[in-house]
Image (cartoon, rainbow, N blue to C red; front, side, top):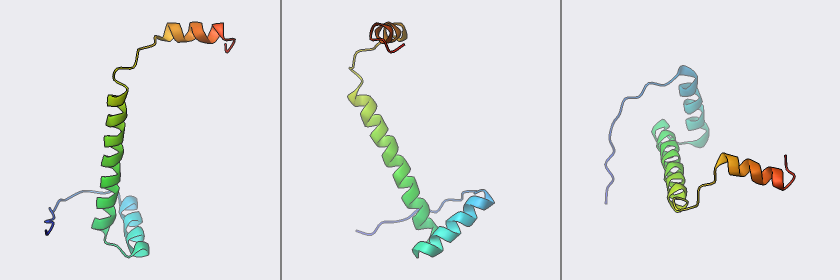
Length: 77
């Protein structure tokens, strides 16, 4: 199956663009490949964060006041 790409116009800070150009040259990849990989990584991290939140959705809530009481009781503060 052939993956079709979608063209987008983005505006980069000149220093970031230069860094992308250099990374592209050093890794023998196009700027598009470098940007696509970075976006995929950022989205994967977001998906991991959302999954972690979902996994902990039913954890009991602990109030700040109770946390302070426990810390004091255990001699931590």
